[in-house]
Length: 262
Length: 262
DNA sequence: TGGGTGTGTTTAATATGCAAAACATAGCGA
DNA sequence: TCGCTATGTTTTGCATATTAAACACACCCA
Image (cartoon, rainbow over the protein chains, first blue to last red):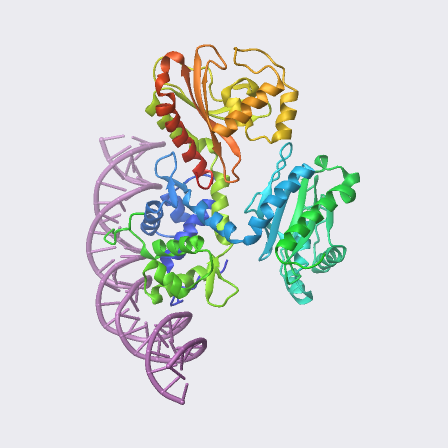
């Protein structure tokens, strides 16, 4: 992340640093002390003290069991849920995906493209067996998954080239594209077929079916997907059973967003 | 909410107000303009301008479709879900149940459904008298106790039928259900009332009050219960004293898990 | 016992964030 | 067309937030 310029006349450093405290606490695996926070932010203890003092008073952070250490407080959740609830697509998709989960027995998700990432907005876990690690609020690199390719289908040729040009390629599986050309090829392919069935594209042993959701303008605004371990899917029925159900759900959401036809 | 004192030496006003901007935008139903925000916060436009400027630069808020209006940005989601992922239910529940134990004088427990069993995660023994045999890590068959019926309320109709179909029925007390139909009846009843008060259901002479805990998805993820020997409870006050306290504790835990409302 | 290091907290000089007021622009109705 | 009002933006003197440094306390090891 680009460091905020101190010369920026309109910048409020107290706010900037306070939010960074929250993010650092969010990324931390264990509660942090005041000094931990100061070190992590390369800030004087006295300044960190004031930030922590303010955040604690607002209940955005709270003391952990161990004295003088802090974790995020429940109040940050309200912000997250407020965001989710403001995305009208989540309200529309939630019951449809719950139903899709019950029909198929595997986990269902709705995701959107947010910057370079796939952001999961709605997530219904399979009732039994495998529990996916893609919870609501999770982010994953768009270039590396079938869901990402599906969502990237919304970019036009130029945008896609720009996107592809600045990725940090990392091989997750043998299917991970490792250069712009192969990513573009994948996206193009998905755009034409209108769905992806993946088997271990993002994680070995994990499979998924992904279908785009379109709004009134016809653009791809989200992606419905089924996911689970290979063992949770019946591969012979991928196209005959899982795919049509996912398509029906995606169409239902699309229609609710004003998508015509289809 | 108490207004932050301006005389408070350690307070960082910029942070306080910036977070309030986020909360106001979170509570708003439509995007807000700079002036809207300034009005809502009773703040000068110039100050609101600087806050909005900073938040936008950090991508905690973003411009809505309509120019010069703002909504929450996706980055707030990271905070909310970082909180959820790092708050194990046990850490949240422990102090709350310790307090509940002190208020009621009887043993308090938090349990989850694990396979076909009730698994006790947190356990606070009554300070005096009877000591329950339900320690942390203990398992009991879910079908046979009030706590189990409470937790089974999370299963849907089909799942519950499947569950009920493969139990090895064993009569612990006269109250133990001995066939699928009576188990399903019990679970349905508890789901509707929202609590169970049991007297010797699992063990003769042992009583309990059980209340479900729900997470952000609304599902039942755990169960708070009070338990003790009949001699430890004042039966006339089960509904008037013990139950409300247990419900308050369960609500507190639920809220910390992101359960909205209620 | 005593020095060393770490912690959270307080202070006070100064660097800086703040808001009133001025500015620029846009929209609207008469 | 002209005023009137509301908007986002910029400026600037003043009030105040900030941080280096000092403080108090706890802990550890020699």
